Image 1 (cartoon, one colour):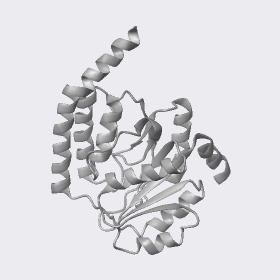
Image 2: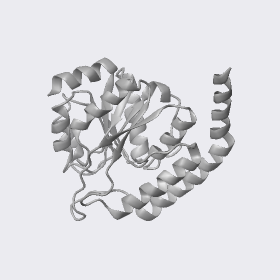
Image 3: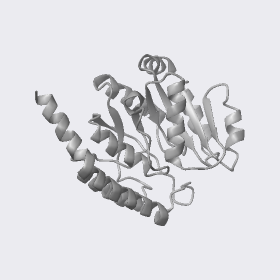
Length: 254
């Protein structure tokens, strides 16, 4: 199972990045499943205060580990993961969550899409109407999809997914201004402004029942942060995004 996919990831210099914060309960199963497919794994411990450090100590010979002393948010953790991946010589990074909602077998879908679209950002598209899917997630995704279309002139079916492949070399100077969940939306929009192709692939997702699910999303505060980001991105689209796309289009016609 591991050989073919791991060889393809090595050929394309792709790694998997997992940011984690206080998910020690699910992390071992996630890593054990991933290691069946690939050894190119970077885990970013985003200042966890549970047993995450002890869990990762058991995997230190199998995966690359980045440890943050303080929790600064998913966006910051991903940024540190991108930096580590670059240091290790990777050109692409597939990001996955550490709570077990993503399936390691879907890595093959990203690699197939990458072979067909080198240099693209590949975005996992979830089936949003399924068992245990939180209603607020569906609303947040529709909300985010609408503003993404306004800010870029493009459409995506799932702008909230954390299961993505990032083209690291094309995003070297694209440091996020935000540090938490909203950074993933920021990268999507700014990549579109840079005319980086964005391709979607259907992926599986599993949600635990509400009482068992671990979430660090704070509905009030984080929704406010996302709303402020969307306001800033609308202005950015007017001042930079659409003009830059127009200039590129004009030069391409010459």
